[in-house]
Length: 180
Image (cartoon, rainbow, N blue to C red; front, side, top):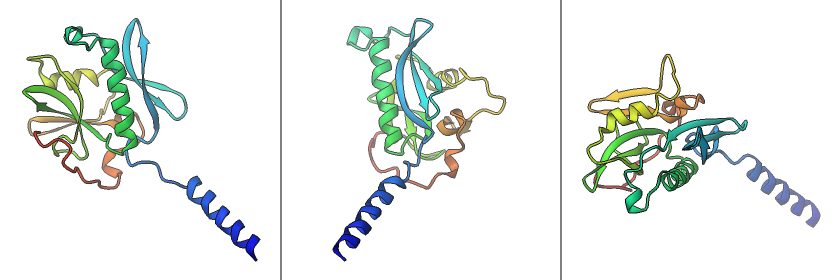
């Protein structure tokens, strides 16, 4: 009887581990990594099938003087994308302001405020134009661009070709950054 109970518990533990759900985010992307493409540091989404999709090319030296070379920004933002994805927060990319600087950030729903910083833009850089340009890397006939009022929202799941973030379970924005 004791062996039967132990076997049942072991089976239950294996079942829980095997059927653990993926976070409700860009679940088809295993991770985001910094690599070099045509001599330029580039953030890639690494899909579950091994395919790498370019997300951001880091060509600007604007922040190098403050210790943020294109390579360092690539590595940092790639890690942020991975962390946000693991938390289930990488759904929409949009724009905002933090400490007087324009930024690219994430939002859990279209029309919502920013919940986490992705990266800071150059001074006087148009955030909407920058976001539009960044994600025109892949020419899609019907792209994942959504404009709500003054802000542009890019559905990361649509960009990666793995569905729509609108189909994911709702998640609370929380109050990670209250200055948005």
